[in-house]
Length: 176
Image (cartoon, rainbow, N blue to C red; front, side, top):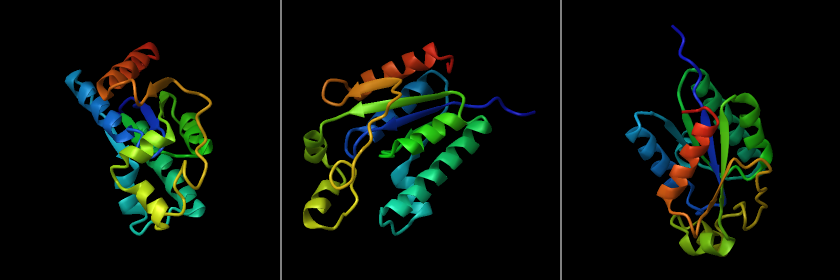
């Protein structure tokens, strides 16, 4: 017996905007409701697909096309997916939306200065030292989403509040 397709939520924003924290809060809250979901965290998936990443434009195209493909396969097989990925080009997020019927895009609006100050992985420090060459928001542009289903303010909203707003949108759109 084939499972009904799942749904996908793509959480996007600049590096260090809070995507992973919100993705984990959302997964935790969903689990409390008896709903399972798989987080596709770009940093984790990247270790498998590109173990020595360069983050070049060509590599990012390969990586995000593969990430979308993995997400689509999971959703088609009844797995609910939370994409935790910057995906600084709209075309990658748009591709996922076009291939997944039940799709929500969450945009974390976070000023560059706040992201740079947080910098839990040292990404922006690597920009300053020249170790990183393709960081969205610093050396390459970040294309804000055109079709935002839920917008989160990284300064005002707690991860738990963001998770509740995402769940509310999921209910309104028939995901839950």
